Length: 295
Image: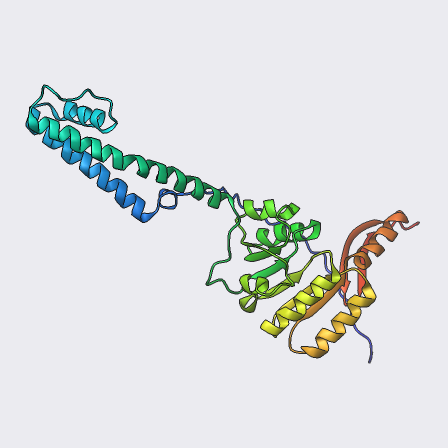
């Protein structure tokens, strides 16, 4: 009939995506030592090799014993070559100088390795060429669950959080998800998350004003950006939705009140109904519940 629609319900089975194991990759050798330091260490090794060969030729020692004597001289463990020939004494002096050069290299290598391990344990930064990703604002309870679900679906994510001790920061670090630490209302934070090249923005912080301000600013950078906001008050969420839809009619905008979405499920559960699912339809919630019908 005219003016009427048809609703078709279909049983759909959902198999949760199996999360892939993600191993924490440690710092590689190239990350531990810089290029210049690696070349310096290679030069020291080459100098020790040359000194060992020359020592073997001058003293007629075996190559292995010559290397052993050279290393003793290098670390200033051997006795002075007073009773030896002049070439042997010169070699001992040269080896001592090489040993002096090796000490600062060892200290520099230890410091660089320590810095590399700290960087490996730190949060990742968004790659420069990143595009088509989802920018997730807020790593609280809701943001953490959304992040885990997005990564299960293998969707690229960049998180923004101003609290380095937020509960979702550890999860982002373990999943090797780029995180930008900073206030989303400050200039340059959303740009660092590459929001101008993102596919969608999920504003899920606990502050309505922060979510709204971030969404408005993101729209100035990317007018066609898909935006979803978490808002507490449903009337405010409705007003925001209508305003953003009127300002950007070609862009997809969604604003949802978490408390309003959850309230019907809690109310129905209090009545003894088993909630099977909840689907938000515009500003309302469609609940699926199991009912006992008397025969």
